[in-house]
Amino acid sequence: MDVVERGEGPLLAWHDPDEQREWIHKNKNRTMVDKRMDVKTSISKFVRDGDYIASGGFGHVRVSMSGVYEIIRQKKRHLVLAGKTAVHDCDVLVASGCVEKVEAAYSFGHELRGLSPASRRMVESGKVQAVTEISNAGIQWRIRAAAMGLPFIPARVMLGTETFKKSAAVAVTDPYSGKRIALLPACYPDVALIHVHRCDMYGNSQIDGISVMDMELARAARRLIVTTEKIVDHEVIRNESWRTNIPFFCVDAVVEEPYGSHPGNMPLLYYSDEEHISEWLKLSKTEEGASQYFDKYVFGVKEFKEYIELVGGMAKMKKLEDIEHLRAPTEAPWAVLEK
Amino acid sequence: MTSQEYSTVEQMAVAASKLIEDGATVLTGTGLPIIAVALAIKTHAPNLTVVFEAGGIAPRIPVLPISVGDSRSSYEAIMATSLDYVMGVAQQGYIDYGMLGGAQMDVYGNLNTTVIGPHHLPKARLPGSGGANDLGSLCWRTIIMMQQDPRKFVKKLDFLTTPGYLDGPGSREEAGLPTGTGPYRVVTQLGIYGFDDATKKLMLLSLHPGVPVEEVNRNSSFEIKIPAQIGRTAAPTAEELRLLRDEIDPSKFILRK
Image (cartoon, rainbow over all chains, first blue to last red; front, side, top):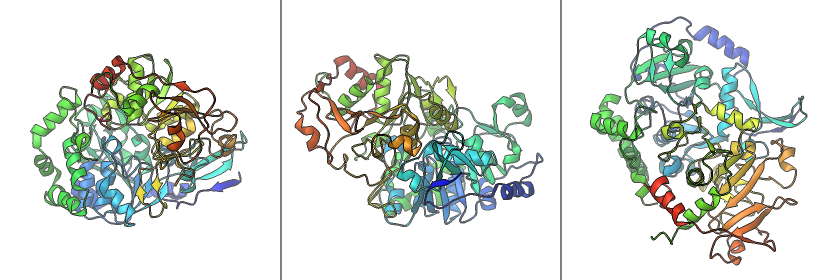
């Protein structure tokens, strides 16, 4: 297969498949052991400066915000971020100075709420670089290739565009159809954070609702921190094994963190806290405002429980539960913010 | 605002909704496209299958999703699955329509949602492709919704994020994109556009009520072909406006603009 075109983006988070097999063989524990720890320990143990990091869920949906805030609190630096529909997670990590480079599929935006003032400012001032571009299917399939132990995966996206040119993909002639096709390199994040509905102490995890990319991401990442709304008895998993998305052998840390996706949405449990996200969007219009936010909500609290109290405690969580179940209207202060 | 008055955004939503026939499958992003799709379902297309890229298939949409992955995107759906699954079925050819927007578009319907200015140090950094490149590559027909002005309808994109007809006839196939796919219609505040079969360049199909034809090229940096026969888009009806304002977007997430 001759390469007919080569993207000029750097090849991030790739390993030779045999080197990766060897790494798994040496480093991943295949026995069911208790992996429970607090979020502080999990981040200090498994997130290193300079790591390529990926967040599960979908930007402000089922994201491990307790883990994200802890990364900021521990002042991790030079991270390379998988911008896989990275929304609130990306915005605060970039704005807080933890991130140096981004692989941008969807980043620097808040979907319907508009663009992210803080992370845009970091990119537009050159402090953070979007070093490679990719599409959402592109990054999903990079991660899928890794989950299958393959060096690359063919795909019919990105072809003919500058999204391709700024990626690490290549285009070849398909030996079967004779047509041009893109080959996307596997992506093995150094570490991933995935927030789930329930898991046992070994890390056997169940996600309710859409799984987004997480079934593949759990296998692709070298280290995986699972934060969970609830730790359940091992028998709960065995009783409904068809609901399990992530098996224990992928998991390195299990952290119990109720409301751990806040201010994000946790499907079927609580909706996103649009008041809080609006506060962030408003404050982060200036650098000082962004610092104020971090001082109050990240550095000003010792742990996630304290943060939950600060954002409104159980009364607020109850309200978000009501909105999730359509018992209360969705309020979105950003919809009336000045543009 | 009385029911007889309406905004250009409402006109765009109504015009786009009519482009999608009942029984089709449609992959949509956030913003105005969801409004158009929701209106189609409530009017002429009750059997439309809406698909969201993060994994929601055929949800009921009692409340607009803020994210294409939030819990509203799979509310009472027939399947809550994954991005891999949805993009896979799109690549297989199951998705009839893809709904897109953009910061810039060129004459071939290529779109930019990545940067304004140079890529390494942009004047404005935009979110990037997201699922847009995938929709533009894999759906049979894409419908683009955007406001047009000379800074948005440009001769040369600052960045080609999502493929339209690339450089013209045959160039999608040459690049390896699925045969028979590409932009189908463009809906702006002025009218509805299609693409000339021979050149794959943008061509006016119909003007919204009250819009003079001169506005079309006055609001574009590239030349838009004006055929001899031009249609007139129907104005939104009182019932369509009621559905948009009272049922689909009562919180004004999108219609505020």
